Length: 297
Ligand SMILES: [Zn+2]
Image: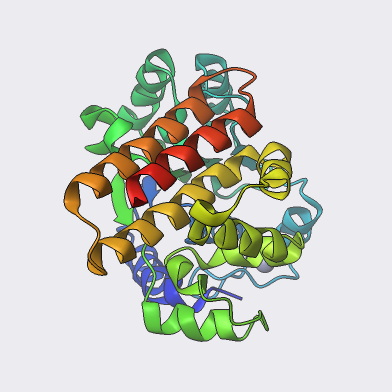
């Protein structure tokens, strides 16, 4: 099932495909959790399906069965393993594209988080983009479009993947999630919330929220440290809560100098979390809480 907020974009792509205007390289930019990955997976299946309707796969032809088994010979998915996508991964893609199709139809490459390409990888990809082959499609996703060279962007059809707040709010409501007060902060990233639900992390997120809003009155941070040490990607969620809480304080009359001091303490925490190897999390949080308490006085 296509995600409801992605349907207009899906329709637009299906139309361009039926009119033979579908670009051989499609780039989808948007926030984490907006549905880019699901969109390109559905498109890939639609492009490979023998009897797709509006670029939506039928689900039971030979190609669809191969896709469901994850063994379609004409589909290649490249996901980031480490910090970067290197030139070897791109050369693999080029080789794959240059060979004839096993099912005698389209061949599709999905390249996720392509903003993580090294310069050499981007240069290698550029060659492929400059010499499109018939019935070969590249579907790229990206979260930081500013990190991509203009030469790459100019050779792709670029789409901004966005949500429709009304649709996602309804969709989130259908997930049967408790009515957490922070839920609205993620209406732009609904699949992130769905992932937390699937991984039974919603309680942890709620704990982060409570710490963020009560940090100046808290003295025991062990529950917070546990959560952040277990999944360092949640530092971003915790600091988002802190920043939002700070904005509320500003509206309620916090002076601007204190606000700026608090904001820079949060920024320092974010920086250290991603740059300091083996960061002492309990110490970093105590320091942050101390700075925030100071700025509130
Ligand atoms: Zn099919």
